[in-house]
Image (cartoon, rainbow, N blue to C red; front, side, top):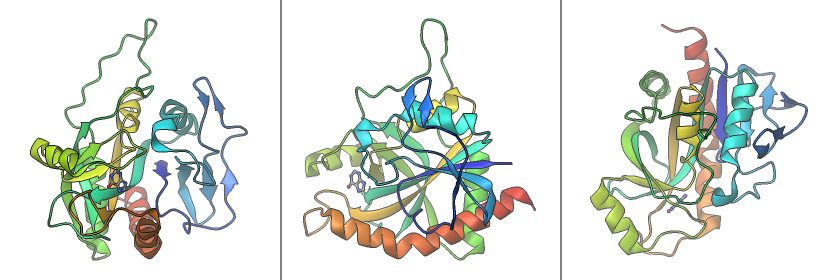
Length: 245
Ligand code: HPA
């Protein structure tokens, strides 16, 4: 089983000497964020950085259709996404990990579907994050002694962060974390029949939940500190799906 890993967060130290899996980032839907890559150390995985190799593609400008299509075309059987998020639930602290089981989509204007006049499609999305992948991620977390709690991912448009009133509304809607990239990525994977799940790294208290304003530099530090854990979790997960049991 080949797993596509779409990240932006915490994938900097996954392996050395990556080899590209495609010749070009061009797809029928335009340019993907970059070339999908394989690392010799992790042969059953293909990686794509959704923000581009130099982390310059903002969440609302990501070509999600091209990225998901590129993953499918690279032969992956499922996708695991890695997200940086703000913590809405007051129980969450920076550096915590969440395994979302539901989502609420607040994005707008993104190219969000492969459906069209020549492709009549209404996919079931009652379980936006695949149960089997979630279970495997959860078992992998157990094996490395990592706490991974369930949660609801609220996806905002960005690139600005939210207002405290927006975060309060999201909390009333049932969201426990907030990020900008799970949608339409999750829905597009579903449309291409790719099981999809994600892990969220909490990198800040959501707006109005902390005592300080939101600073990218602080979030980057949380990501850097968490990178070894993300790597361990993914390595464990890749071994588990390779040799179930
Ligand atoms: N809001 C939206 N997206 C985010 C946040 C946040 O607070 N932190 C990291 N990604």
